[in-house]
Image 1 (cartoon, rainbow, N blue to C red):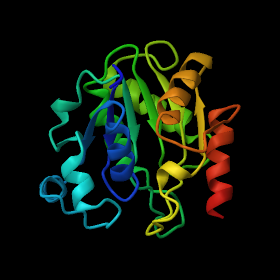
Image 2 (image 1 turned 90 degrees about the horizontal axis):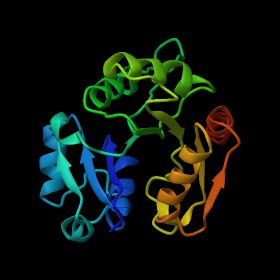
Image 3 (image 1 turned 60 degrees about the vertical axis):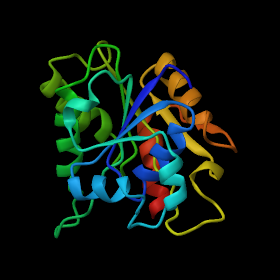
Image 4 (image 1 turned 30 degrees about the vertical axis):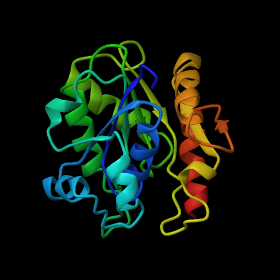
Length: 209
C-alpha cells in the first residue's frame, strides 16, 4: 500500500464504494456519523446494495463513527449529500458539519476534497472558510482544497466507480497532481484534470441537469 492515509467522510452510495476501492491501494478510513450504518457495514451488510458482503468482509477499510479516529490523515474526501430544500436551495448542513468534524482534527499540509454536488464557487467560498474556522489554519497555504464530482450511477453493476472517467480539480499544481495520482490509482479509464475547482463544480451541475 502507498503511504498516503485517506479518510472518506460519509458512507452512503457514493462514499462506500469509493472508500472500498481506495482501501485496495491506500490506508483508508471510512467515517459516518451514523453508528447504525457503521455497525451494519461491519456485519458485511450494505443497505444501499452498492458493495457486496464479500467485498466488505475482504476489505482493509477501517470503519468508524468516532471523529477522533480521523486525526493524522493526509487527504479527506467529503461524500455527504447536499439535498435541495423547499425553496430549491442546496442544503449545506451535512457538508458544513463534515467541515467542522475534519477541521477539528486536520493538520497542516492536509488536502480536503469534496465530491458532493455544489454550485460553482461553493468549495472555495463556503467550505474553505468553514474549514479555516474549525481548524485555525489558512486555506491555500496551511491546507488546500480539491473537487472531484461523484459519478456513481446507483445500481449500475456494469459501470461501477472504477470504470468511469473521474474529473479532478485542485488548488495549485501540487494538489492537482496528488489527487490525480490518488484517484488514478483506482480509476481504470483515467483522470480528466479540470483547469479549476469552479470548472469541475460546473461540470457536475451540467451533468446532473
